[in-house]
Image (cartoon, rainbow, N blue to C red; front, side):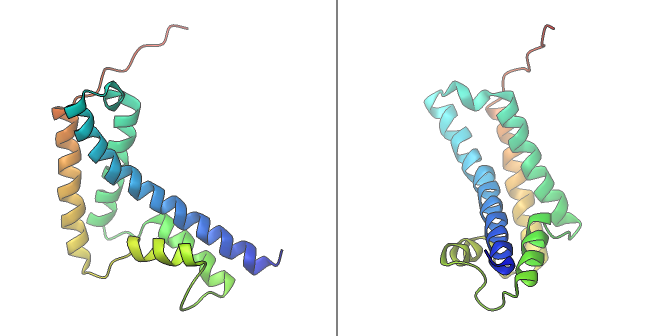
Length: 137
């Protein structure tokens, strides 16, 4: 396999990871709300809820500081190294990229992420997770 193809595939893998992260944050909140209505016990799992809360907090803090997501930075570095330009990567990568990256001023993202993060924090209290269990060694 030629090196640029391997690097391009690595960039696509990072893009897919990024899309999965976004899906976890967005769909996770939808599932938490649906889980309350449908009384799904798993939505109160403290590890799932903590991971979900930390994920959105990281996004909100990055947006407040104007930091670019490390996954975006890694993907762009790989694409640059592979010599990608106008239509980077595969067809799937192109469409996942189109769904993830919108053109708007940074303050729009900061406000949007903060509002979404506020809803996630609110869900912590509305659909409170179970307590973490102590391990007995």
